[in-house]
Amino acid sequence: MKTSYLIIASLLTTGCVSKPLEDFYSTEIPVMPDSTPQIKDLRDFDNDGVIESREDCEETIRGAIVTNSGCPDEEIGERSIRLDVKFANNSTKLTPEYTRNLEELANFMARYPKVVVEIEGHASTVGNAGYNQRLSQRRATAVAESLVNDFGISASRVRAVGYGESRPLIKGNTDIAHQQNRRVMAKLNTRFEKTAMKWTIYTDDKKKN
Image (cartoon, rainbow, N blue to C red; front, side, top):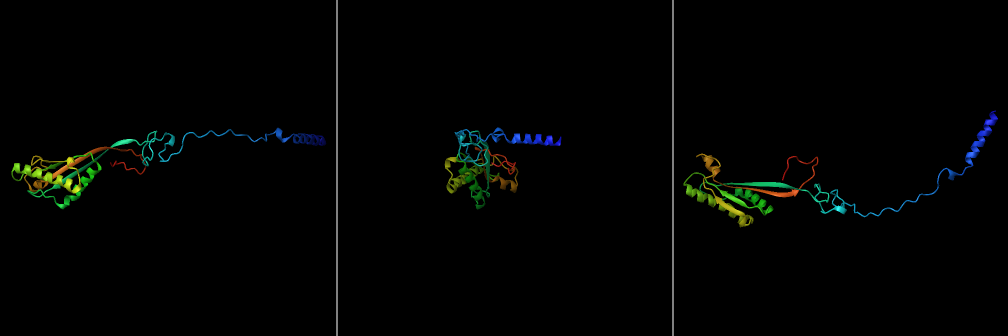
């Protein structure tokens, strides 16, 4: 009985081996279709995340928020600067301590060439009101001329106006009030378009224009 089982097993094994390998799997190497030619330019030279095939703005600022065409988004920024120059009693002389303040104002105007400034001259209540009016005008003119002559600002962008004692910074007949009211003031504000930047973990929440 055992001998019969061995003979049957041997025949089955011989039968399996006798079949060619080709019956179990194909030996043909598949032929891949030709690759589709690349039509669109997928490069991104300015690293803004927009491929060249739809890029309209090359050399985008790094970190800028861009549109689908690769152009930076714009947002409105604001800048302002103040000028506050004090004068001695009955004087129109600019002292060296305010040179830096005038230079900062001039630099601001140079950076924003469309900005014009009104220089406000003021006086204390010491003396005659009519005289103080003329004195305040001379003070404003002195500052305006310094901007033009010393810092190269166009005279067409500078206007000097004297307000006399009509707009006191501090009211009262005290030495401190008089000192603070003998002054020239100016304030400049400008609005401009700037590139909107992406927020990162290093972005300061306090926006600095």
